[in-house]
Image (cartoon, rainbow, N blue to C red; front, side):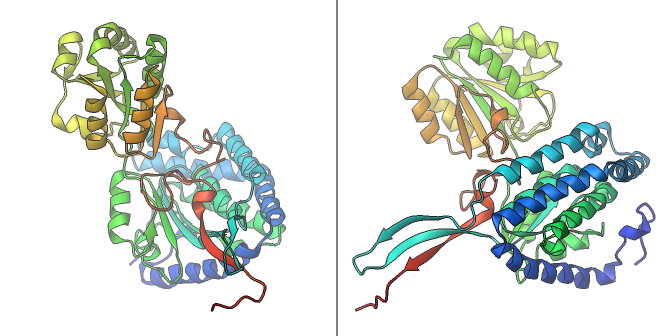
Length: 433
C-alpha cells in the first residue's frame, strides 16, 4: 500500500510495517516505564520544565508546523470549529507552558504509603501508590492534548504512547521533538513519551491490542471513536462515552443563582463534555424562572426543545422528542423538562444522563444531600455550574480526560488516576504460625 499524498512523506509508515513499528514503540515504552518508575520527583519536574523551555525556544517551528496542518485541513474541507481546535495560537502555547509549570508544582503521588497499620502478628501492612506502567492515549484535533497527556504521564511515573489525530500530525511531531529534548535534558529516556508518526488507522488497532506492552488505553474524542476502542481493546480502557449533563432548578432554588448557573452551564462553551444539555425545572418555580431564562437563551441564539408543559410556557420552544433527552448536542441547543419533584429529577438524570456531571440549584440542605447521594454520576454538584467539572478547576493541574467508569478512576483523571496501589508489608523477622 502506498503513502497518503496529503501528508508530508516524513510522517508516513507503510501499512505492511505498522505491526512491527507499533511493537517497536511498545517495547521501547515498556523499557522506559521501568526507568520512569524509579525516577525521582526532582528528575520528573526537571523534565517538565525543560520541555517548557524547549517549547518556548521552538515557537517559530511550532507555528510553521501548525500552519502546515491548518492548510491541509482547509484543503480537506475541515469545518471552522475543527480548524479552531487545531490552531496553535500564542495564547494556547502560553497555556501549554503554564500547564507544564503547574504539573511540575503538584505533589508527586508515586511512592506515597498510606493506611500503614500494625497487625497482631507484628507486621505492618499499608498501601503504596505506584505508576500504571505504559499508557496509550488516542485523541483527536487539539495538539495541546499532546503536552497535557505527556506532562501527566511523566509526573505520575508512566511511559506514554500518544496517537493524535491525522489532522494535527505536523504539530504533534513538532511538540514531540520538544518533549524528547526535555527528557534528554533531565537524564530520562526520550522513549518515555512517544508520539506515533503514522496517520494510518491500523496503528490504533495495534496499540489497543498490545497487552504485553500497554497497560491502559485512554481514548479522547468522539463517541464513535470511544465506542470502537472500548469494543476492540485488549487492555483496560479509561473512558467516557459522552457528556449528557443536567442542571436541576429545585423548588427552593435562589432565583439569581438559578439564572446564572443555568446560563453559564449551557453557554460558556458549547462543544465541551461538561456543558449542560438538559435543564430540569421544578413545576413550582417554572412560571417564575423559565420565561426570563428563555429570553436570555434566545438572545444567545440557543434553541429550546421542551416537554409539553415547557412548550405551553415558552412559545418559542419546540417539542422535544424522546431522542432529545438522550442527546449530547455540543451545540446551542437545550432540552428543557418540568418535573414535579426531586425524585422525578433524579430518576430522569439516572435514566437519561451519561453519568458525567449533574448539578442541583437549591437552598434546601436535605434535598441537596439527597441529590449528592442518589445521582449516579462521576461529578455531582450543588449550586455550581457543570462547567467546573475539569481537572484544572478541581486542582488536579491538567487532566487526561473525564472518566465515567466506576472502577479505578472516576471523574477528571489527574495524577492519582494514572497510578494504582499495591500492598506493602514491613516486618522484623516475623513468620506465620
